[in-house]
Image (cartoon, rainbow, N blue to C red; front, side, top):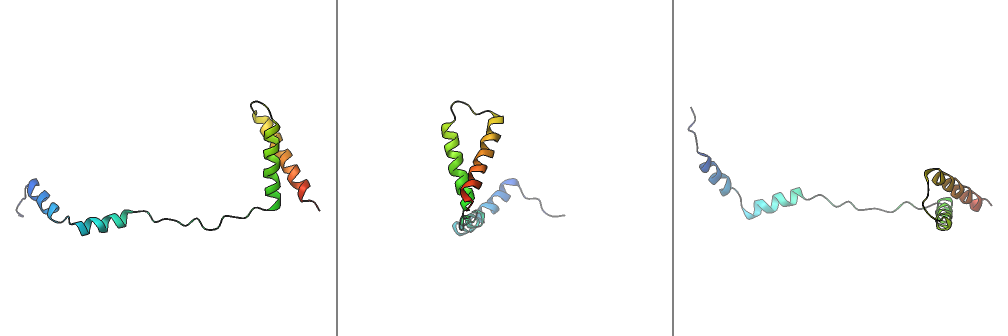
Length: 87
């Protein structure tokens, strides 16, 4: 039968194992690695023109935009984007 140790004795042993270097090691391990954002995806001309058209359409809209209006505005912006990229 193994000798039983008191809770205070176990805490003392655990506290003796904590050193500044050990704390530093564990803090380095727990830090999340920074992800580099990389290069942003380039916009196509069509996507750019859709964004410009959408900004103009939203600017001319007065008041609150309803759900059915959002779909119409989106379709109209896509039509403008297609129109602007036609050669």
